[in-house]
Image (cartoon, rainbow, N blue to C red):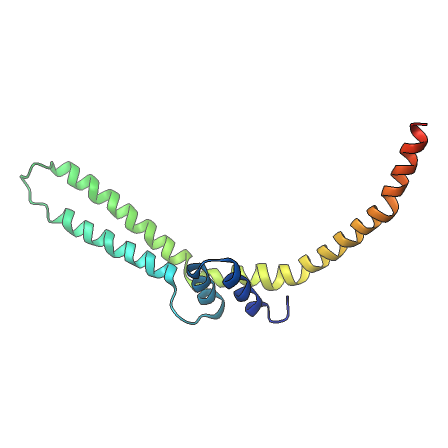
Amino acid sequence: FCKGVDTNVLTYTHHFASGFMYDVAGFYITGKGSNPLLADVRDANASLADVRDLVANIPAGTCVEQKVVVDIDQHLSKAVDSVGIVEQIASPEHMYPYYTVVVHEEVCSTFVGSVGWLMLLQFALGIVCLPVLACMADAFFE
């Protein structure tokens, strides 16, 4: 798995995940193409900007109180800020170091050794400890 780990992760993602997740994973791992996740975030940001413009253009003296308009604008401003934070978090510069640590460093070093120890211990328990347990139980219940 660890020889050509990026290709293997993409193959696994293509086989077990949707096309959207494969496109996102492909963008973050290879850096090629467009990021559909960031495209959706940017679309949300554009929609929020459009709504803010509509709210800002509500004429004074309409049936909507000015305090309500100000409150709506403040909430929309917080939503725009939140979307901006999501855009920063979803950027490749922020995501790729996590992928590198998890896959390249942890899975391909610590995890492989841990699985080896787990297999060895399961073998020892099954071959040595289980027969000893059976003999002890037989002697105890006689």
